[in-house]
Image (cartoon, rainbow over all chains, first blue to last red; front, top):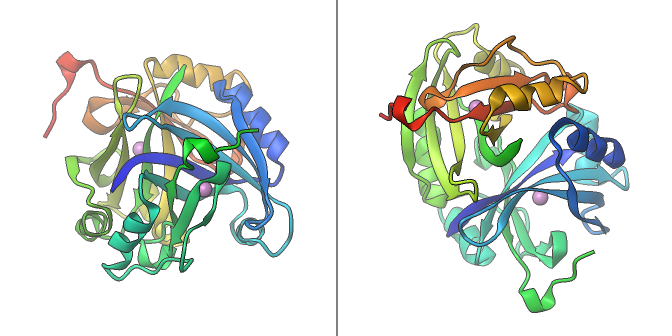
Length: 147
Length: 147
Ligand SMILES: [Co+2]
Ligand SMILES: [Co+2]
């Protein structure tokens, strides 16, 4: 079951410039940043609000660290902008299966590592009316490593 | 000050098909729908979670009702997908001025009517790293009309 909008993923050419943009325009602050080598991105999470499932909603700013990653390809084709939306769930496998059971394709056969050791999968945008949709399960608190 | 992600605005060719898609894939339900003649859209709000400012976060599904509205032009150029993101605030004029004071252009000189008699403005995507950004102030409860 999905219990929140976890984040909106935004493709940026220059992560530091986008962080500064959101700080000046709206006062948003970075609460976490990391490099995800597998996803090919340098990223920053800006916390916007708490959610009634005990978690929070974020903007996720994503800058590619290599030319063959999804964000680099998106920037080349579309320029900067919203890349994906992410829904939070307590069980990413169950939420993925609920979607794939209706005929939607998942991008990964099993969840991969997302921000802060979360478990994530993506649903194919062609099966979701043009919206690349991520499903996110937060790491167990005992496993979490925050930078 | 911005206190929540209010909604993610998604451009659809067929509102009923998109509503049915989100119901089947994720179990989301419509909590409000309306026609906004000024914006040129038929829309549905799907509530995803409550937020710690006492409001909630939604998906806003938008179908054009005429060919010259922003959503129709978006669909023609990009196809279905995320059209804008919307931040909630208790004071849309102040939140707009905070942004425009940093050089960002607002689309309207004064707020217009949004969903459920909210007051809204938009920030120009070219000034926001490619993200069309809406600012939303909910209607006073006494003024609200829910369908
Ligand atoms: Co993401
Ligand atoms: Co909107």
